[in-house]
Image (tube, rainbow, N blue to C red; front, side):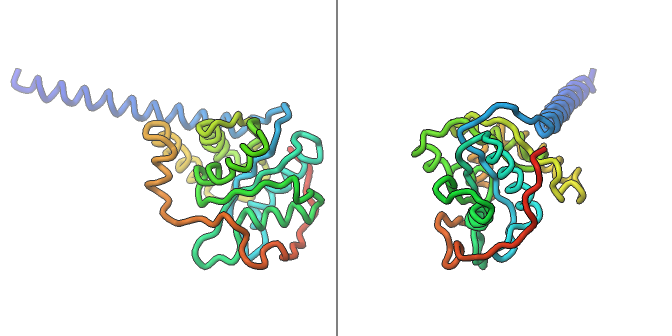
Length: 231
């Protein structure tokens, strides 16, 4: 009988560990499945989540997202494109500004491009929401990498949008340690659903973001291959 309390504690700990593992396993499956969904419905806007730019030129990962958005726009899936992503100290361009320049260079009128900022997914949506709200936009096609699609949609929903999945399938990211990205997303989603995505953002992102184009940003000339078809 002397070991009964210890056995009970061990059982409780074992059950808790099992539940935590099960919770994150289910979260991973949800992330995986959502990353392979492609909505057939139209929306009011295409929401492109920002990623790295290279001194005024979209990175390969960002280019794929923008090309995907262009294909959706040209197919008449939505009349607006919203781009996001700010700049960090030392950057001369914002991700959203570079994205807007790229889209304009490929035929999207500047009047149909809405810009946000932000250095993480929560900030991306927060900073573009005023523009979306101004144009009464609620439904969006969320364009990002497959492993990021679930969290992007969850954060969009948390801020009042009605997102529909439209992940890219040809991002260069899939060739580099993809399991690490899924591990990171599983942890971020699992924790974010418990404490709130806004709280998680405040804990993990301390860098300020720019909401305005930087000097000379819109005059940048971008010469990249023509957009590929949507998947």
